[in-house]
Image (tube, rainbow, N blue to C red; front, side, top):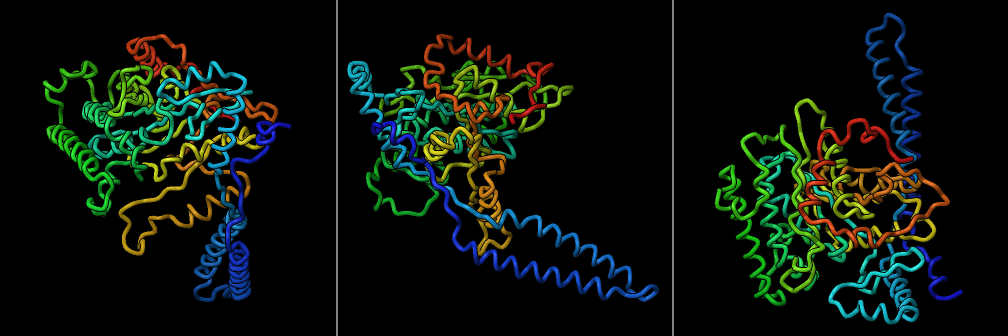
Length: 478
């Protein structure tokens, strides 16, 4: 067995039992004994008929019986807490060796690809090949959802979008979609501004390994610029971001986009006096076409695809809130990029780890168990928490115990954001142990449709009538 074949059996993630499980079980056992003693006490000391307080006692006993029973039901989740650890280094090492092996077989073809300034993507035996700097063969796209430019300011939304665009993934294999259920031209204008700023932000992040990749979160950190390497470039990018924020906030305060700004992009023709938050036609605008060789950042590297979508809304059609928006995004993205992996984010979220896509791939690409995994959920962490977390906003028990406890049973809870999905798991494909599938690295390679054609065809599937007479929203994968 060769190196390439042998390394297939190496797992790309490991499962470890959480520390302190024995102590946790002993603690739970003592609580269980206490609950049982309370039940016995309540049951053996019920006031006799006619005695004062009898029904109050019985009511308290019923309440304690229910809460005790509920506590028992929650214990299996806390009894078997495990932690998953992705092995990013092993993924990169295995893939780079496969690349070297493949190079010997396809020397001429591989050499010609290496002459370009972009990452090399090769598929060997239906497996993604990843170079040492992680040039993923899988196409990924990020869904960001927003609904109201007042409750969810556009500057907040674009900070999330920019953090997704700057994740460590080959830009030609990354697409970012913004779903605007409010159909607001303010949000669209902010996205146009973000697309221009991304030409500076993405290369800056990757050049200096910036963490976190959200510009709002990064520039609000407390550190001395004088101690920062290349302070001049840091100050330049920060000024660009602050200037962009001021322009967006000025337009947002006015409540409308000035005519001179509208004239700069034909996308604003979609908005007229009849467009409202709850009543508008489908709007799809490809802000950055990732196929365009002229869509470059300041360092001459390709930019990721960036798409604005406002699905059609009519008063006589149910829209199903975020679930309906996600359904529309799946259909629209299938027309434009059709990637294998989906990351969905709320508009106020961002990745704390720029390698989060790579870590998710460790689970999906594992030879033994990868095909059994439909989605990978990440725990959430919140900023601006009060001192000592008085209101429990960190949700420590939920994130570190209960969600990890579900993992002990091979399950996971979808929390609504920060989750990576296999596209096929959202497309009514049924699970099969025998079918491991394949990673299609050339999903849209030969798509010759123009941007206008893609937008027009995407509007059809973003309309209300596209779900009529179908199973969208009524069935799920098993």
